Image (cartoon, rainbow, N blue to C red):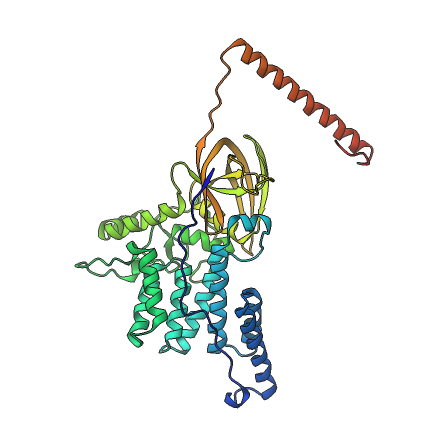
Length: 423
């Protein structure tokens, strides 16, 4: 099995340093001296953690400071930068490290949303600050909203055309996603009435909620992973992928009036959901055989992201064990289908799986912290000669005898209160 390099990752410019909170002599009179000093100490503690790449601790310190003094530009900007750096770390963390030291917590996309929320507040407070545009653009890049990130950078360059962070981030965008940067000339600009308010892109497979709001079908159900509420008005709705149909009329209007943009959206969605005819994401755990059923509790950030993407596609992934000698996945995996997916309020998932067929891993690579593999399917060849049939029957009989013996010992141990070990 061979490995490819990880997918290209962004370098975020302008977020290497965080701002210091003003000393008491520089402060306004909106806070008592003791409260101001408390905020000052929390921001300093967060900045120290940020410099040492302890981003979760930095976020915690900034959040405490924000609860004392809400809507402070320095606190919001620093916390947004910490969210982005933590998301970047999760995106670039290799699958092999995660397999030996699994993480628990929010995933990359949720961190991006939190960073964007702080960046939007920062822009409302400091609309003429280049730092605000830099922070928002980096949050959008983490969320893979490349066109909106580019527009944000261009708006910031109107304020300071010579801003090195903005220009460097623009070059990074054009280098990694050149096709996203192309603007079609000679066409009328479309109204934002045809944009999804979740992903801010052209509606793809539009679905309308009972409260009358329309979103991309995938965006709607990603949002409902965290609660059964409309993403816009927060009305409680009861919809499932099986009961939610695409709005045929609106979908036809979009395809007819914006064919090129619709084709780009379709290609983008297919790339995200379908990794190829012979490719699949891998869940590294243990050996599993065809026709086996099991339950999984998904808590790692990288696997939360993977499950959401799988549920937008064919609901299938590969399960593979680790080779204890090399620390890498073994060469043979088993395809499993997610038959039930229950999202929990905090973003975790409870899955019911059923395994189907075996496959051999040809090559594997990391994508956003989890493994993806190109596979060849294993086809069983029935025995041809009488000797082969006899050997297979003997092996089957031996395996059945061993299984019965193991079950008998297990029952005996259970009857004796589990005092005997099963060897």
